[in-house]
Length: 375
Image (cartoon, rainbow, N blue to C red):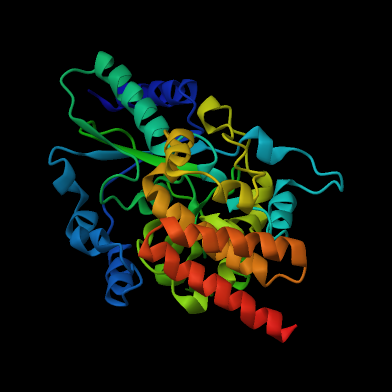
């Protein structure tokens, strides 16, 4: 296939991607040598915490061709996920980020990361990427390819950066001038020598708002994230006891944390997603802690089927809510009636839960006593 045909093919692939709901598609090569030193340093510092797969599969991250020996190009895509519910206008004329930040100030609210309020993105993107591959295969046979959606040792932000989908922000996430950071990434490894797209320049400048706002100081410097302190890691990836010294900073966040994205000026340009699967489910953008704490294991399984939250399981879900309830008990706005209600709920849960959850309940109750005395 000559260069003119490849240019035409890439233009056609991009149009097909748009039809499938992707916001952008660009192409790069497999060279990740610029990112390799940072990955090795990050792992050496132990910043990956309990995510042992990061170190176990480091070789594959540094050598992506091992995942598909025939690969010649990486197709990188982004898909916006900000649902209409999050973009509802605020009465004060503020944008969607103001409303999300406001929720953090209400200790009775249960705050769940925006991306997780709809259907599991892994399933949505994988399905649509596979459909795109099928369309390409109708045009070119034989063809070797492999689809990735945060499911294999792939340096997806590096590929997004190299292809020009965005640049790496100081919070380590990919940033796009038209979509901020509120998008998912996916990749297709392919053995067709498609024309390469060019990277774009960075546009963070002197801004370090994402570093300054991080509740636990997990962003230790520009482009440096200590996952062990990150609330997203603690509430999603970390399977055990949440460090006591970090619990107060978690506040009312029970699944993930968007602070570094909410404060980012580029996210005022975040785009509305037209993907039905990303619409909010189970009122997860406006639920209260006590309401969710009442869910049984069966209710959790039923309500969270098809959600990214389902992966953490009921025990971690309850653990996270207990920490938030402990923080509610110490909140100045928590009156005596609310305090008594929460204490009773926690004491009763101790009768029918795991040792992991009980450890956090005991902390919440003791923490409450200490703060009551302090008052």
